[in-house]
Picture 1 (cartoon, rainbow, N blue to C red):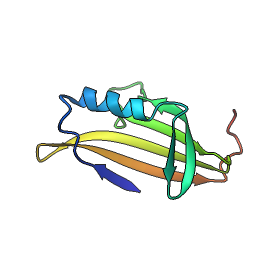
Picture 2: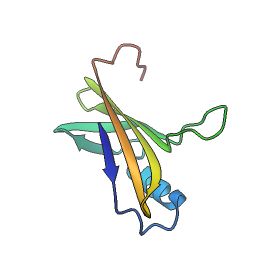
Picture 3: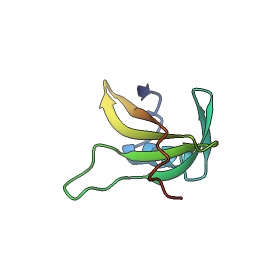
Length: 101
């Protein structure tokens, strides 16, 4: 699932938008997606060995019943003078095996 978020233009820079969204999606915060309550377990800016990663913010959240995981990758883009946040959401069912607490 890919979601475009508009309306970020009131923020001065990509960095401002990134910091504001990181505050909203901090570890321990909760949100509802498709009627399921999730708690954020990992959140931050990914790193890679060569250059800048395509993803600006990475979030891994677990459903409150611990049955589901959702991965959210957010990238900021400039389109027609609008600052957009592109969110790729991947729902992982029955992914508990191999995930340590």
